[in-house]
Image 1 (cartoon, one colour):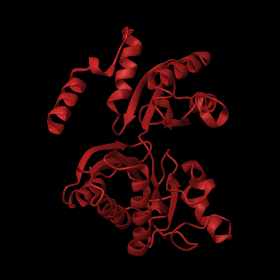
Image 2 (cartoon, helix red, strand yellow; image 1 turned 90 degrees about the vertical axis):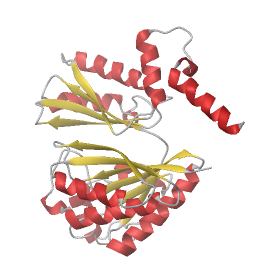
Image 3 (cartoon, helix red, strand yellow; image 1 turned 135 degrees about the horizontal axis):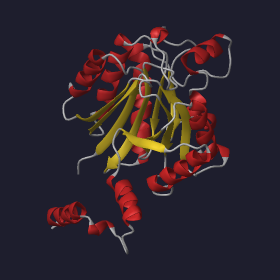
Length: 307
């Protein structure tokens, strides 16, 4: 049976499409790897490339993308609303079919080691791939961003990378490589440009402040849209579903006298997450995933293949 791994790589470039085209082309140069999605954000100055491949091919595709980012992105001339430590900022591997999270940890460790050997980019392992408990959470690794991390390493702090020496790549910084389960990158935009409102909502709803379980949140200003944004990662959407997050943000926004202007998905979303939200808002009685036509057809196909 064929293995299938997803990589949701984040790059610190959201304005120069030529750079992004080069990164995507590098990924596509690996046989049997497919690019599923490219999300570009000008305000965040960041892009997310989602691609899939086998256990054997996905790591090489990620490495080629990292190499192209190192070649073309200079963090000394980069500023955006999203925290970052590297040109190829975050490279997580997600098990989709016929492999485990532990398999993805092995892929992440191989990619991290090779990223240092090939490109001299220091690597920090996070989530399931973390080698230190204080590096499981990505925000701990990104504390202070590129500039702060560079200074901390110069001063001899306890932030040495898992692969590499106590010095960032001069232009490409460092890369966080991880293994994790599916998450949803989900942003909610407000009908106000006041970023203080978004930050207050983020503080209230994120898990680390006692808010919603499995929710990470930041308040960000979107100058291009003249809006404030609550930018979130939903790390266990089956336990804290999208509609629950949406309603909580709406409730908190109204406390500040503002409304939701709309929401955005960054990258791809599992079908089950949208099914759950649809069933909630449509108030469908006794809803089951088999009520979805495509799900029923896929199960029939799987039964035919096994017969």
